Image (tube, rainbow, N blue to C red; front, side, top):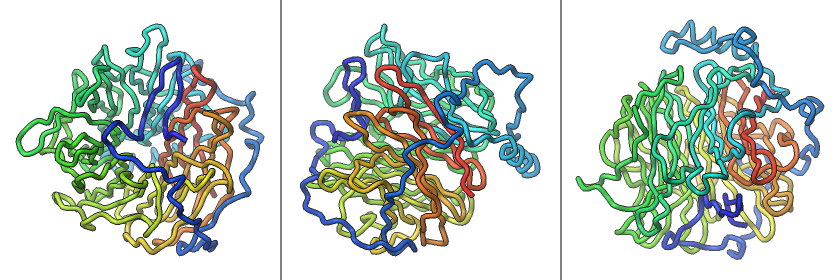
Length: 483
């Protein structure tokens, strides 16, 4: 199975995986045996077979909500002022009170005819959503980046708007992060020229009210050793730092390594790059792709990525504030001696240093999603396994709270048709245990684009995915609350 790709309107859109020269490997033929442990206390694996086969009674097709016709008078503005603990706490309480976790939402019903690559980040009294919109009449240059903000009751606080200003190129695979009053959108762009410099990372910053803080989008300069590199960069992910700042993680074409290598780039609160790019761990001849990034309140940055020269393996590490050296150095395998790919990292926005990593592992004709603690860097600790056995479970997205977390993932029905699942787990320090049955979120087939999951409040999350059949995908979301 080619990870993260779909045939859309006759164009193969490759979102993650490999370009020529990034290295490869076929985990389907690597000969690894399955893990056999079945405990659920964080020291073993539990594989879940009892997934629900139908949505709950409140998520029928007839109950799918189109909130585009609600008027402002029908809405309660629950956005927080930020920076004032009392107002923020009151806003969060209002958010939880107004939240309806039993509805599947079509997020932009009046938007472009095809919507995909959705991502989400909680903040400002609701959730920010970013996605790709595609207009078939404009062919390959019709891929643009759109964003909106939802109230906690699911209604639009800010209607969809176009983020990118650069035209004539294909913008794909956006991400979003929220820090204080600032909102950052970042994505990859393809100018269609091919070669070593057709892929670039772009970004643009907004305030909490959807007002642009940057007049135009900006192409991220890849500066290293005082020189600007003329090379490809893509697979961008974003995470917040304290004080309205951010970190971007991506993968760039390294001349020294002869492969793609994962890097990070700090951004100041005004959106300007803060220093040069930081290669996470340069390795000659080893491809590094699928970066994932998260940070805690201290400013410590956690990174994970797929190394894919002879076989796919997931490595992770962290950078202390103001440090340019990874710790551990070198990065560690998530699970010693095991293959894997497509990691997702999540951290709780508090001092508890609650960090988890999820990933997928292919074995034969099936794949399993796994999740484990990522704060202690213990490769001997085994993870929890998610997804029905014997099925292709893939593309995980993780979110975590103080003592709880959840993972969304896709499960192949046939071809590029998927179902979307989410499952919660309890977290006691580094020990994880499954606390809820897997919940089927999708109504009908979902696209194979990676879903996203963000913590909203308490044990409540918001998940987004692309619903429908090609080319009429719709950005779709749902608030999800666990006991």
